[in-house]
Amino acid sequence: MTLSKRSPCPVACTLDLIGDRWTLLIIRDMMFFNKQRFEEFLESPEGISTNILASRLKLLEELGLVEKQPYSNHARRMNYQLTDEGKSLRPVLKVVAAWGLKHVEGTQVPSFQNPNQS
Image 1 (cartoon, rainbow, N blue to C red):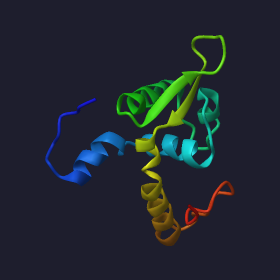
Image 2 (tube, rainbow, N blue to C red):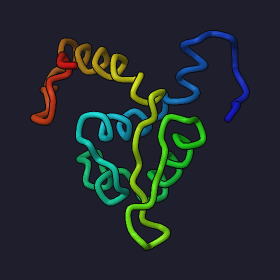
Image 3 (cartoon, one colour):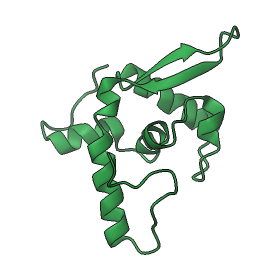
Image 4 (tube, rainbow, N blue to C red):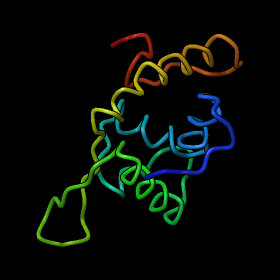
């Protein structure tokens, strides 16, 4: 998928792809919580709505960051998994988490994974 660019700045271009309120949280859930199914993403404490979740999963698939595969005979039941390109966002999420722990009062390491681990 090709989006129009506001500028050639790599920060701006990256934010155009993954900088909305929900996208990195979905990637976080896949990467650190091992979530794969639509219903599992809905259980996250941030409370994403079903229409936004569906939209973001579709966008992530179009961007090549996520791939989906059916997990049952029901055609609409899908597992979502990060592609290698999606997995390459791990260092970004770790740095964002570390920054938040240091600079945002009240944040804490989730019990699922220490952001400093590989």
